[in-house]
Image (cartoon, rainbow, N blue to C red; front, side, top):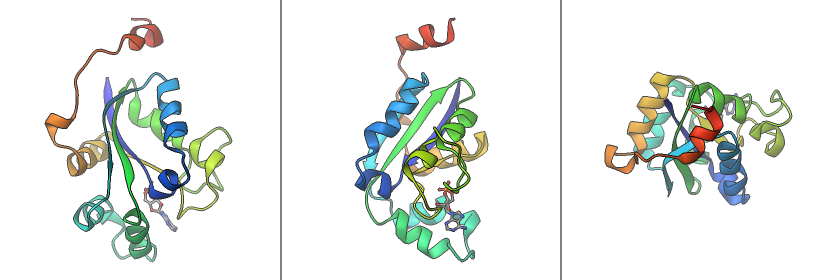
Amino acid sequence: MERTFAFIKPDGVQRGLIGKVIERFENRGMKILAMKLINITPEQAKEHYKEHEGKDFYEPLLDYIMSGPVVAMVIEGRDCVKQIRKLAGDTDPKDAEPGTIRYDFAQNISRNIIHAADSDTSAKREIAIYFTPDEILNYPLDAHHWVFGD
Ligand code: CMP
């Protein structure tokens, strides 16, 4: 099983969408290994988004991501990185497919509800920014057997 990192951004939290987003992960048979409501620190925000440093949206992105609590998660499932990205939809909600989180709940690339790691390498890097190993729980989820048939 693969792991990924995602967070529900401040707009998702403020708009009361925590349950709706998590429901989609659970519906897909994903297992949540860790989850917490946090205020992202400037250090975490800069480390997370360092690849965007210098871009015109970088400073507004940091302000936005630190403007209120986020729900950070470690999620496990088969092909989890790709599946959670697919559930999230295109970064720009205008390009996202109906049925994805960003299409269904967002209109603007700078207020796009959710972040999801784009690769296994990013997932590992991002998990380490927000979670210590002891915060990531290892437990059996009975539904996995029923979802995957093995
Ligand atoms: P996220 O998946 O968190 O990864 C980088 C974030 O930068 C992205 O979602 C958007 O919130 C933001 N972003 C990317 N491109 C732009 C852009 N052109 N204008 C504003 N925000 C952007």
